Image (cartoon, rainbow, N blue to C red):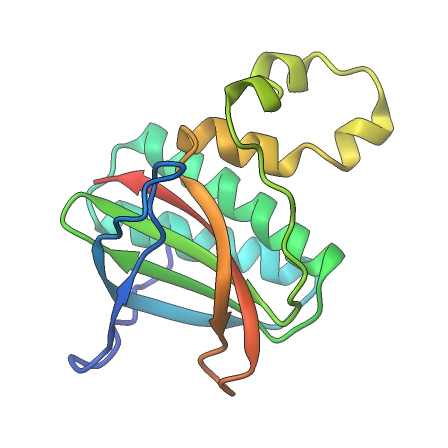
Amino acid sequence: MTAKITPLAATSPTHRAPAFTTGNPAAIAMTRIAAWPLYGGAASVMRSRDLVRGALTALGLAEPAVDDGVLMVSELVTNALRHAQGPYELRLRRGDESVVCEVVDGSPAVPPLPRNAAACRTLAEIDSTDDQARLEMGRGLDVVWQLSGGRCGTGPTTTTCSETAAKAVWFALTL
């Protein structure tokens, strides 16, 4: 099932997305194109995958990039559900060259992200892990870092539904 993008009103605010390059304070202008509440539980993970697949396909991304986006959002939503509290939201923002997917949760705790390739396990290392505990926990942000080419991060935000202080964990894909 492909999700339909529900555009926000034309007056949606422009957002300054976090810089994609570590240490680069420059940010690019992004416009929010969609935001969806997530209600918790396994259904939210499935829903987020469907929403992102539909949105990225509608934006014209190639199938491999869409598949990467679906896997990354699945990892981020699962992390939010396991390690944070609600409210939860899924947001998409678009710039001239990139689309940013944000998973928002109501916890101020920021997860540690890999800072460079050396600090991150490769996808081959993740795939070859025999330790079941490592397969179940501790690999999601490495996967996001690898698939996004390091174009991922965290930052403070508020929730759309209640303006509650929250954080966003995000990744970017090239259009």
